Length: 399
Image (cartoon, rainbow, N blue to C red):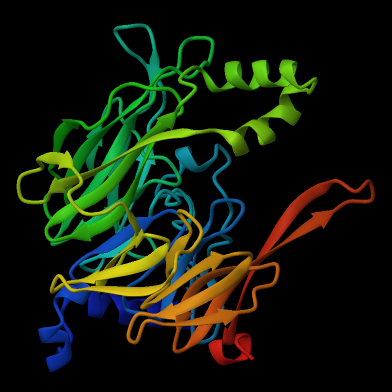
């Protein structure tokens, strides 16, 4: 545990800007000017590790050097037991590794995270959740609520953009009726000031639709680039599933997976000016991926990249749609049932072997991946899962 916190503390020093900066760091502001905050990728920019979540919601830190995980808790006597009432009931009396499973990230020496509030009845009779932004010391202590927004929430797969002490994201108005049926939802652009806890809501960026969502790609030329989408069959999800089940002689449970796989989405792309909050239709091509170095998109069956100077380079055959993942200076994607890595330094594509595991990060030319193993009882039922992390040199995956 001490080893983990030593590594984590070193990362905080870098994040607060207290360490001496090299000339490369001073002149390479663009490459470090923003980052995405995500529930599924909690990699920290100091490059020594990442936050990870256990099945019970405990927040841990994975050290990329040792590949050891440790609870984010600095109490040597703590047993790291989950709150009896669940994550939403966690207080400072509980292990500080719990209650922080909603988009945790580091900024200026502090740990930040969101908390969803309980459902509340609105004036129109519908029920909706709110959202709180919290901060505290890494490992516990000095926890405080910075902001609270009623009627809007952030979902697991939603992303936020952190730049210059401001956290930009789209929050969702996602009400349910008293019978627990989802109603049409929409998203609103919100910016949190991490220095003082203030926030500004710039209003709705989409109309009300069923099965609606959004996706944040990143920042480009001072603009937040994102998409909004909804199911073309614009009605309650379970109603559509039930009709599909009846049509194909299935149970609702059987139909749910199949119907989800054939859903068609109406997608619109936008850009929001980070200086004014003004939202307009996207002026760049529809993105596949945005990194600190390039804006990646497809055109005429090819993957292309526009750099910060406006130069566009033709790279390779187009990957599968919506299937480009950035891994710390590399791109990971699939095409035709094969998997590839591309180093952003030279844009060279390399085919790699991928087994039954999920690539997560790249560190010191090693691919760090996650493997989930089911625990099965004597009746063949899955009772639990074990998540493990491993790393392999990239060179070994290309031989």
